[in-house]
Image (cartoon, rainbow, N blue to C red; front, side, top):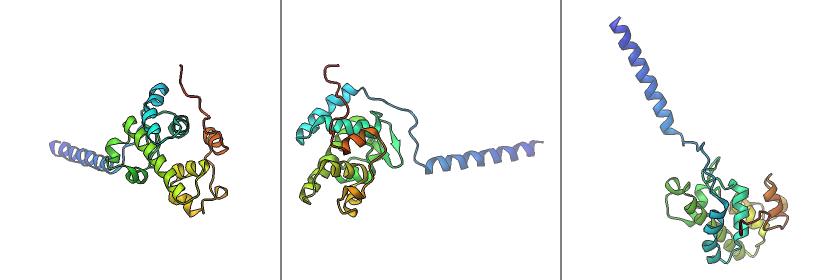
Length: 179
């Protein structure tokens, strides 16, 4: 009977080790939400958008479209308030993606930096428009360039805020000013 107990314990320990191995190999999914008060996001956007002479209402609407102000948002490979992918993060930041992407203030800063980088790059290529900026931010500049910078070749995300942004309403989400 004692030998039988050792065998079961060995199987149990092997099972625990197997589960731990699988858990260590996969990226943890963020299931908890962390909704940041809209007024805090609005205030935090003022400095970085002013630095780039960017309308904070435009960046605010983009955050609403991408994450609905959830700092823990995770969608495939994109994370945080601005739903930034690792490749985009590395384009404009030397900070560790994995260690910082869910820090909402850092994500906000890097998101504005990336938005400004996309805008600058589109201007350099003499193809800037707000729809192309939105597409470049959402899909990546390489994706937009591979489609010849033609909006007719780029799908509009199935999101009401994005549809309004692509249609030319650059401030479809009311700012919390005065609330």
